[in-house]
Length: 259
Image (cartoon, rainbow, N blue to C red; front, side):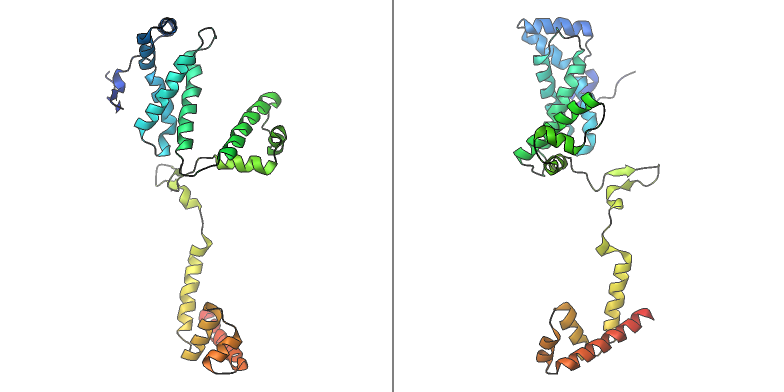
C-alpha cells in the first residue's frame, strides 16, 4: 500500500525514513565522534516525530510549514543534547523539546503581547505547580503557588491567565454530526437581545405619536441630557410646564407600548 504524498517545506513525507533503536544508537555514537553525516541521518530519520507533534497544533491557524521548521529546530536540539548513557528512548526525550520549541514560537508570535516579567512569573508558577503536584499528588491552589514564589495570589492568577492561548470565536466546541456549535454561539450580548431590539422599535414608534413640542422635550431631556430648567429656557416656557408636558408625554407613550 502506498502512502499519500504530502509535501511540507519541500519534503515528501511519504518517503521519510524510519530508524530502529539500534540504528539510532549507532548513529549517535558516530555523531558524537564527529561524524556530520550521522547527524544528518538522525535528523532525517526522525522527521516523522516532528510531523506527529505538529498535528497537536493544527487548530492554531499557523502555517504547517512554519510549525514544521520550528519543530525541526527542537529536534536538532534534542539530537545535540541526547545522552546515550540515560536509559530512555530518544523519542521520549525529544517530544517535550519539540513541543517546547513550538510553544515558544507560538508565544513569541502571539498578537497579544505579554510583558517579560509577567511571563517569568507564569512559567515559574507552572514549574512550582508541577513540583507540588508530584510532591502532594493533588492540584495546588493559587495561594500555595504564590507562597512558594513569594508573590501575591493575584499576581499568580493574572500571570497564568495572561499566557493562555486566545480562542477563536469560530472554534467549534460541539458537533453531533449536524451543524457545529461555535464559541461565539455561547456568548451573549445584553445590548443585542431580541427583546431589547423590540423595545427600541416600540419606543421609536410611540414617540411618533407625540406632538412636536412633546417630542422635542423628551429628545432634549433623555437624549441630550438637559435639565428641565435648561429645556424651559431654550423653548421659552416655565420649568413647571416642561415637567407637566414631560409627564404627559411619558404616560401617553406607556399606553401605546402596553396596548
